[in-house]
Length: 345
Ligand code: ATP
Image 1 (spheres, rainbow, N blue to C red):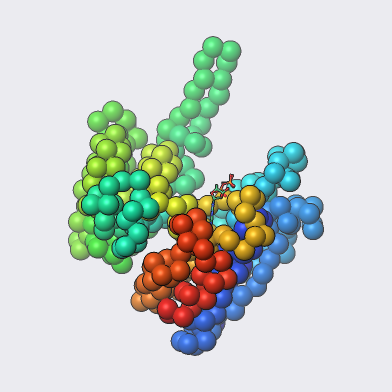
Image 2: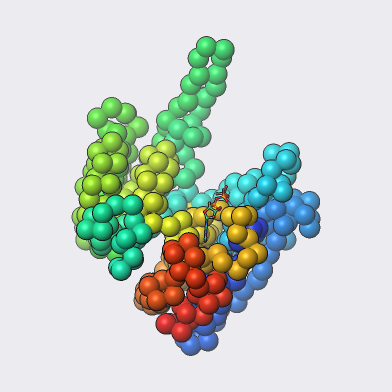
């Protein structure tokens, strides 16, 4: 039995998570996985119904679940609220409650859909990489931080245990993939990066099957545009990962295609990269591929069912090619696309 907490959220969140749950249910029926789903309020809809974005009942349920499937949260309706009542606060609180310190962002150009990429098709062809970004440390959180009238300062700081735990996530992911890991830093300038590099090399001793190399972040930005196809897993700290994962996210060609996972001490969370897209919410045209591929990541990283995840990925690729939704220039509704994925399964 595996319990999945579903947090549909706002805007197109409910539409795309419904699609992902339908796909998981179809697999469950065929394979007898023993999945159960609990739908819980989160984000703006939770603010409306319960006065807070991450209600107590949702908190309890995610702590007990085996995985969390999240849609998207937020929208103009809640933008005027005080900070603690904003849907985004719920997301920060969810990550903190579950101790999620690693963010996994795959960027894959689906065979046949190379023309969607802003890169030339021959460069986009075969891109299939995974960025593992440290999520709770580094310069975004380091102390001391502050400002005076004429000066401001932040601190990039990592401890060895923080590096070790995120490095392990990256090595484990590489083991399940093509067994290549590139660690990104700025070790020629930053002491933090020198520690990062030494620590990653020490962790690598436990993973002799994974081929480790290093890149400076500036060179990495160039390589990701010039020849992204050479990379498998990319490990990096918080700020470099923030920048590089946005760069990588444009490679496949549409925001609607991208899944993500956040893992750490507690229940892992799976969600599409896109936001709540209020402009198209309720119209039945949202591309659910990112959410369905997030469900595939759930199969791999929460339930250790990588072969089934690959089946879902192949079915999504097939549906994208033969039944594309409007953001990819096609006309398939969310429902029609989801049906096409389930048929292809
Ligand atoms: P946020 O600020 O939460 O990121 P946003 O609406 O500003 O939300 P996104 O929702 O991430 O930004 O996406 C920007 C635009 O891309 C949307 O307004 C929508 O038109 C399009 N888009 C995003 N996701 C999808 C999707 N799954 N299917 C179709 N179009 C999408």
